[in-house]
Length: 126
Image (cartoon, rainbow, N blue to C red):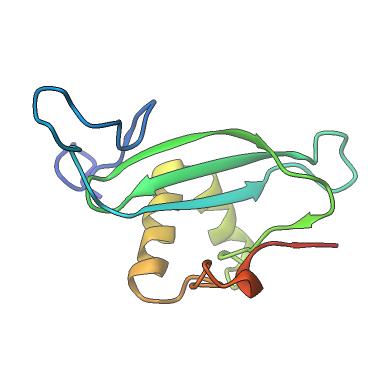
């Protein structure tokens, strides 16, 4: 990521890959959209079901993010599970760092449950 801005900087947008532009007649980017949802509150918290959802495109380096509802009994995949607490904390404090890390996992083929089209790789309920 280029801290001064540039082609490899993530840009937060309100709509990822907007519908076809009337002027151009095509989408601005046809890259794959990836998503990740993670919990930000402890299981004991009444806010446990409020999670952060991120969706991004590696090709255009744009992303959307917001608070999403995930039922308490749904187990979410954790691509940060192998990290030490300090590194995990560092990544979750910065959307850009987290996106860089998640995007790298995908490019290296190390994304948990890489084939999400397979029903066996979808999030499970407790």
